[in-house]
Length: 103
Image 1 (spheres, helix red, strand yellow):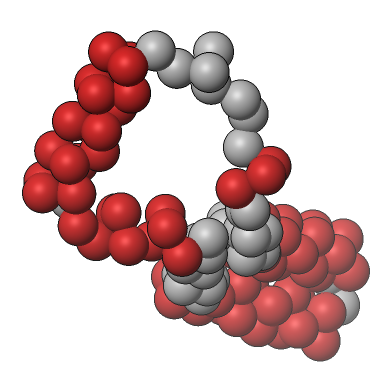
Image 2 (cartoon, one colour):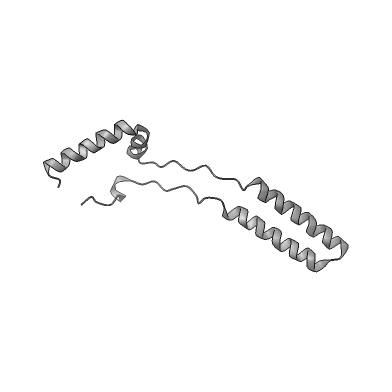
């Protein structure tokens, strides 16, 4: 339980926060977090992978199997880099009872 002085300070901080950043307060009181926009893989990585795959196919047609396999491996690495650069999924909803207690 908070003392009167602590309750007064907390109320004052809350009023100041509502005045300074009303959007933040609205998001926090709704109990929802906004999902970040999913990032697409960068266009340069996708184009790089396409060029490397094309080179791998050309090398394979010419009979240079080792070079074609190496190019295909590097194309897979570029695709993996594009996928791993994406942010994680949606944040989960936080309810007030999940917040840690204030001491």
